[in-house]
Amino acid sequence: MQLLSVTSDFVGPISSPHSFPLNGNRRTIVCQIRTHVKILQTLAPPLIALLLPLSPLNKTPGCLVLAETTEIERGGALFNQACIGCHDGGGNIIQPGATLFSSDLERNGADAEEEIYRITYYGKGRMPGFGENCKPRGQCTFGPRLQEEEIRLLAKFVKIQADRGWPNP
Image 1 (cartoon, rainbow, N blue to C red):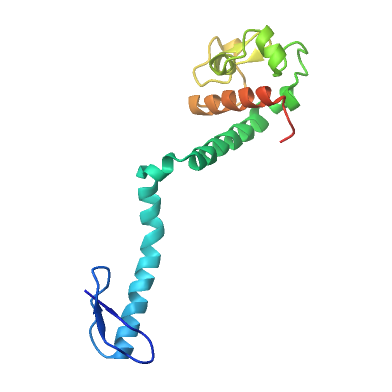
Image 2 (cartoon, rainbow, N blue to C red):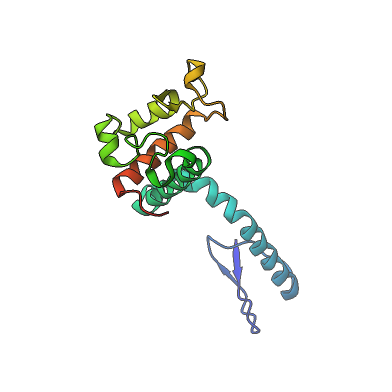
């Protein structure tokens, strides 16, 4: 493989293990270099996207924070879609003692993320269940059902918001 100087004073090929083979006159060589650069620019993003999840760099705290932030945002979007009608700002317009604030969650035995998930999936008291396989039918929402992963994201979002005191989004 060869790397060529592309200055006005053509010096000639320089051997390098990281260069491309180039043949021909100066104009052809410049065109070949541009072609190789375009190929690299085109291939680099997809290759990086494929390799990044496997990279040890993906395990850095910054990447984990970004992934968690994305999950929280998805959970917040689901909350705004399915829960905000009754639980705006963490409150409860139907049953004031069953808010999503830490004190009420703890008093009602629902302060763990797994318990929030269970209640959201199957329902409890006046709250309908939103899970795909929620039963009995009278305890479940008549609206769209949520997938298990969506309910897990909702439970995580609710727990984080409760721990933070339901700050404004």
